[in-house]
Length: 238
Image (tube, rainbow, N blue to C red; front, top):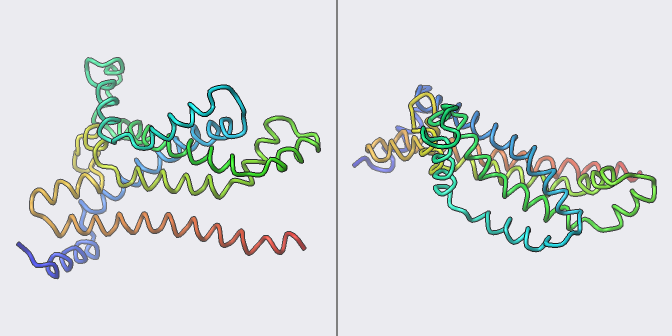
């Protein structure tokens, strides 16, 4: 077995020299994870806003279901989508199984509960006075709700970052729905699992390093936005 130093050196050599498999897995990962996060945000943020600002019977039950769905194993989501897209499944005629589209569908279902639940939490934490002030100025239901969403924007942004972090590090559903086809549906996580099983620890470590850097970059961008807003607040008050 290679020593730790040897494996680490091999990993950096693969990154520096532009290994084709490494960079292709990176591209597929970003494409699938980015599309899934964007689609889930378009669905989850409005739904979380409506649940967060509304008061209706059964609201507590809805929140319990949302919080429970946060812990659903990825392989369960992968299995359900696989059965739906399989040849004999209800959507089998679409021929989406083992394609990037199938992976996006699975990852949207993984990210959606995070975005909805975190948006509900962020919106619920906004003082009631924000909505009342907007309504007193003549704002309608949606306009007042958007004012609340604006106040909760950093909580919502944190939800997007958390959702991206989950889908970019997901392996179970991606493997089941994409089939781990090299150059087509192989992501960094499925490649790590494959290369490790084959004893190719250098490539697996290289992909792991890139994966960690992507997650770090997403969180760094989030904190930069928060800090920028904090610097602008005193100027707005003046």
